Image (cartoon, rainbow, N blue to C red):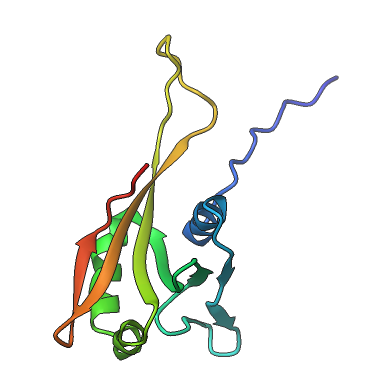
Length: 140
């Protein structure tokens, strides 16, 4: 007697992992700088960023998340003194990058087994002592 097949669990991919892949695929070494402090059960960002990446022109700080929380991430980062100091330093860039799963469809209308992820990237810039958010348009 055969056992019924168990449904496969879909693996969840964190926004941090998606952002790491995104930066690395563009030739920028990237590392996670967020840490979890277990005895007080909180996550702590380093200078407001979950990820830091190296570019040819400087260092990028990235706050990663899901698309539903994009506005909250921007609000939190623009209110942060750490992000303000980060942006005041030379050769420093800060992004809020959020991800949304969108189903991918085959040409004949059938659904693929693997979904695609859509990224939204907002650059934070320091202008006259205030942090402003600007939607980043990629050249892709």
